[in-house]
Amino acid sequence: MVTSTCFVDGKPQAALALNDRGLNYGHGVFETMRLSAGQLPLWHYHCQRLSEGAERLGIALDLPRLQAYLQQALAAFPAAGIVKLLLTAGVGPRGYRQQDQASSYVLQYFPLAPVVEPAAVRLQICQYTLPHNARLAGIKHLNRLDQVLAAAELDAGFDGLLLDVAGDVVEALSSNVFIFDGRRWLTPALTLCGVAGVMRRLLCEKIIPEFGHKVVIQALPLNSLLKAEEIFVCNSVQGVQPVSELVGEARWSAGSSQLPGSETQKVIASLAEVYPCFAA
Image 1 (cartoon, rainbow, N blue to C red):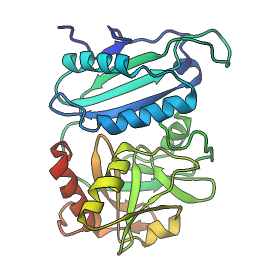
Image 2: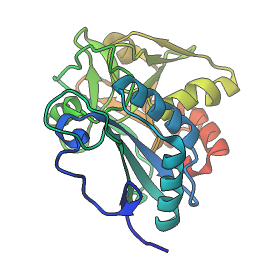
Image 3: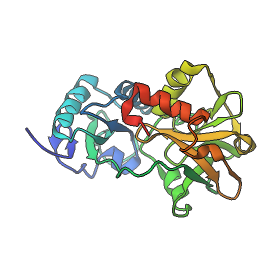
C-alpha cells in the first residue's frame, strides 16, 4: 500500500504544474473535510457543493474518477484528521481563456490540531469588507484574497468577523455565523458574497429543526448580532464553537462551554449525537 499525505491525479506527489489554472488564476474549487475513523462523515454535502462550484466555474468534474482517487487516498491517510480536496481547471496555455483541458484533482492530509479544553471564540471586526459578487457567492473557490487581507488585520487570539460593503454580517474568517435572538436562530443570507458552509447547511436542514427551531436565513445587520442572546460559529472541521466576545462591542456569557443549558450547547449536543466526531 502506498503511504503518502498528498496525491495529485491519483499519484503520490506534492506539486502542481506551473501552468495549472488553479495556481495561475485561482480557477478551481476546494473542500476541507473532517476525517474520522477512516471516513468523511459529511462527504455527501461536500460533494454537492463541489459539484455546484465546478459547474459555475466551468470545470469538468468526473465523479467516478474522483471517488476512485478519494478511496485510494483514504487508504493511505491516517484514520483521523483533515482532508483537503482541490479541483482545478487543469493545465493549460497562457491566457485567461479556458481551453479543453483535463481537470486536476489534489487530495492532501493534515493532522487535527491538538485537543485543548473547549474555549469560546473571541471575534474581531475586520475593516476589510467583502465585495458583492453573486456569480461567486456561496461556492468555495480557490481565490481567497479577501480572507488573506482580512486575516492580516487580526490580533493574536481572535477570529475575524467579516462584513460586506453594505455593513451586514457575512461570516467569520473560515466559518459561518449563527445568532439566537431569544426566539429563533438566524444566519446571514449568502447570495451576494461569502461561503455557504457544509456545516451551516447541515445545521439549517437537519440538526436545529430536530429540536423545534427553524433557522431564518436573511440579511443580518451588525446591530442584530450585537443584540443577540447567543452566537456561535461553525465549520466542517471544528463543528460548532460558542462565541464569547466581539472585541470592543459585546460579550456573551452563553459563550462559556460551562453553560449546558444554553441554546448553543443544545446544538452542540444534538450534532454530537448524529456525528460523534464533533463532540466538544
